[in-house]
Image (cartoon, rainbow, N blue to C red; front, side, top):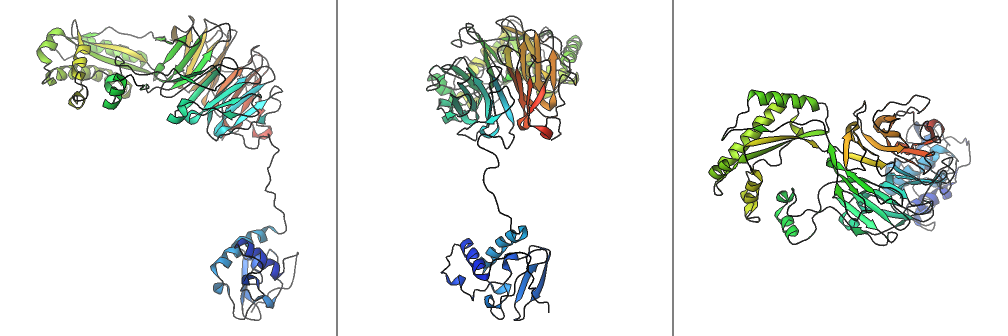
Length: 582
């Protein structure tokens, strides 16, 4: 039989020390009977194998385990009782042995469980979603799990701020080098008064609702706007101590009122707030003395205000594709060949513009309404309206338009009886909205792109970026917007204007420059911009428009010191750069 070796390659604890260590792991004391000399512990339990071991027995016949590559056990018969074996040990002792073997694998190395970096140093590079640049030296970025990075030397060194949250922070805006706000998940609102080094949480009415806040804009150290999901628009004028609700709500004449649940309809009738189901993704205000502000969001929502946000008006996206209505005769449901041809030409113009949907809106004549709209049995009229919709829909689909791009909000409410009890005028209102001078179907482009960012260089000129490579441009202060094309369909998360020059960044390293305010876009050269494979979520410049930063995935920070003409990586450092494929 193989005997335990007496060789020793290092200092190992004697049996008493080993027993005491096991006892501490088991929550026992040195005086516990477990730690007597007769404790049933194999001599070499500190090197209990998890592999690479051998099995033997000592002269007393007790089985022992030892790891060949680690400390061998000194033969200490006093710690063994004749006939003892591992299978006879208590389960709790086995657990201690298993834990101790980890230490045996590493030898005498000491463990350092202290912080890997000094306080304020960045150890893990978090995804960054927003950046606010105050001046040539000061900037703050926010992102994943409450991460805040700040710099006070122009981006040469970035430090990690202290925040009281692990929620994602979607947006940051600094009013000056000391004061600013950050907002994020579940209504999270943070305030800093020391340039981003430390942050305190502020309460607002959206926290209780769990509403995400997607953007914030600080007008000054006391005043800020924040926007988010469910039409959220909230304002503070006292440094964040209180927030006033200016969110978008549904009224009885709102197009979506008829589709609300009966309980929500009753709330609206009782003047209770029911918020519109739309996400507002960004807000931008010009510096004083201007009082102009703009908001963008999903479904092509664009708002503008010329009084600092006291009143908001919808803006219009102007398209260059339209067609005249399809006219039907009395009780006619079939579309003629000429109308099919017109629908085909119309569809081909927007077939590749995936962000554009098509509205199909049917109307009937007064005669048809009188003869077929029986309140007790409206299905005859429903059949006519539905057939005209289907004819139009089929022609568009045959022309290459996918069905999920077709919008028919006024199709017949076949389940109207489900609404009648709680809303007796439901069917009557539907009839009123469908009557016209003559029967026809209106076809229109629905301008509902998902918009991410809005930016103005002055009171007149502005740009918006969005999903699918969307770029919108305004030359009238945001009253109307027109599409400007780029050569990619990837998401453009952020855009900015710099004295006629424009920069847009997005997913998968997409970046485009414009030298004419956004009319034409080109890719930068290798000398102008580093190779990036990750998303870039936001960019911002200081007021002099020379120093700017782009932030994005895994702590990526790019810096420009020449007004956006060229960019270099400043974070992460060295070989953790932006050119790596994740």
